[in-house]
Amino acid sequence: MHHTLDDTIARATELLQNKDLAGMSDLVAGLSPADAARILGRADSAERAVLYRLLPKDQALEVFEQFDASVRGELFESLRDDDVITLFEDLDPDDRVELVDELPSNVARRLMQGLSATERALTAPMLGYAKGSTGRRMSPEYIGVSADTTASQALARVRATGADAESVYLLPITDESRRLVGVATLADVAMADPSTLIGDLATTRPVVTADVDAEAAARMCLENRSPAVVVVDSEYRLIGILTIEQASRIIEEAEDEDAARAGGSEPLRRPYLSTPVLAIVRSRVVWLLVLALSAILTVQVLEIFEHALAAVVTLALFIPLLTGTGGNTGSQAATTVTRALAVGDVRPRDIAAVLFREVRVGATMGLMLGSLGFVIAGLVYDWRLGTVIGSTLLAICTLAATVGGAMPLLAKRIGVDPAVFSTPFISTFCDATGLIVYFAIAKLVLGV
Image 1 (cartoon, one colour):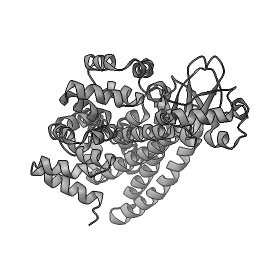
Image 2: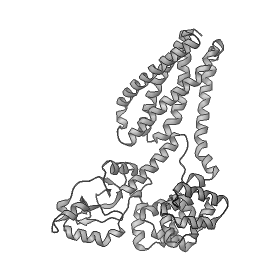
Image 3: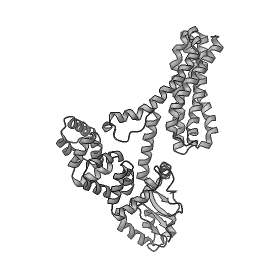
Image 4: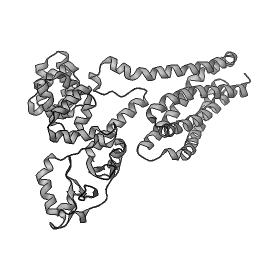
């Protein structure tokens, strides 16, 4: 009988609840590495460590490579030294670097010292680059060929060393000083005359320096639909490649972080069901405190206009509608512009064009919502109140869209993550300014 992954997850959940680790071990042993890692990710750290030890050795490494770096770090703390050193040695260099960032410095140092000279030479230079840079996420395992190599010699090299390379589909071409000359695809080399020099096949493909932000390099790779992006040092010497698989993973991680921060929390570094409750609380409470403190400003605004509320109590009924509409409008604009920034559609210098566009978008939406608010409030209460509500919606939508569109660009210009900066600021700004606009219009129309 064929079982779907959902059926397997349901069975795994039942086994974990019953503490049936033997049954879980049998279940995981028959799964692919990716599915096994997903199932083990639902266990807590202690259960996961026991289950991992029960895996066959040939399956254990494949499953280990599927875990997030944080989960790998937890497992390392529970395994014997011999097992840890073997696992660390068998990882790809980029996976080693990612894991080192999750481990205590003394443990990381000991593991690096336990590597063979060859693997240490591949990994150590990557640790010298800043976190988040392409040099930290690239693979130094590539097949480079010199410009004076023939096509037949290059193919022989691919056959001899391809199993150990991160990718064989893009061959970087260098001169005698290891400086990049260009690249050739495996297809071009295979179709060329065997005596053709590789240098004659060289073409220009995406190239980045190792200090470039990894997310920017990853987007370049995906946008150009290239099998890999070539990575060079400051002197244009070839040092690695960033493959399309690595690029996809980097973008996925970045989008997960942006989604979490846009919702007012920090991203989780491990599977949700195995994340301790206190860790989830820590990821959310900071921004909740920021928003709670910012709400004090809203209270102060309400206190200033207390006499207006006392004179026309009905005004209070529309406050949630107006502040909610303003916040949603600003968040929509911020999300759209943040996404445009991420994919390179706009840059901080385009702020004037973005503001002009968002003013028009906000005014159009405000006119539509304001007309609806005017009719409903006018019919239910009176037409003067309808005028206040309609005018306020028009003003709030225009203002919120403009500010929401500007915030990500300003954040980028000052070096702050737009996803982190925009959400709390827009929430506070729209609440406070929306109320000021509301009561100002009410005073003008109603005379309160």
